[in-house]
Length: 295
Image (tube, rainbow, N blue to C red; front, side):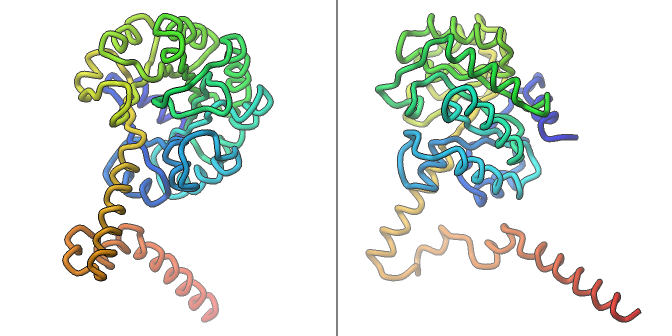
């Protein structure tokens, strides 16, 4: 089964789909090893990992597509990507979809923020007219080669004009053909319930630690009516704290002794990144060559 088809089935399943966010190939491999059915990775974590900078449209389309291709190469589960504002107008949106499909993604989203965009939980956002977003969304839908490639529409209008405007926009985007709906940064449970009751979903909930939206359990989100929930930056926050703690310890003590219980050991790490599988592949081809030459 194609990953795109599987991803659609997971979204349509009665069980809410949990998408952890990862920020590079290593974190994606760890996530897949934990047994997640699908994963995602957004511009916030990619900007932090690749540039050490905030999520303010610093990364190019090519950089993001290459980033996703490396991740998709090593995991067997569907991966959902961040198309930001589509990296330009309708022609740029079309190219974004084609490049993301070639990278191996199972789907992506585009949003109605003004370029350069900001993380959805930052202040100072603005949005483009709904009519312009409709044209970009239609371009994205028409550009996909695989009809199962999921296109999600995101609106950031709640922070700018309020929940009523956000819901009106999202109803339009659904009518155009968006497969998955993302009203960013609802501020309370009442707004979250309105999203799921007033929109012909499926809808996604975005859980940001310290963000504008209350952190709810999987059961609570499912009861409200969300089909998908993502924790896009939690793993990045965990890694950043662990790295900061370690660097502080090393700078203070001049040794890693005493910190080793907080670390994977050499053999553990090599097992996690499948060194054994690589060695088995090398040995198989060496044996083949030896047998071939012995004929």
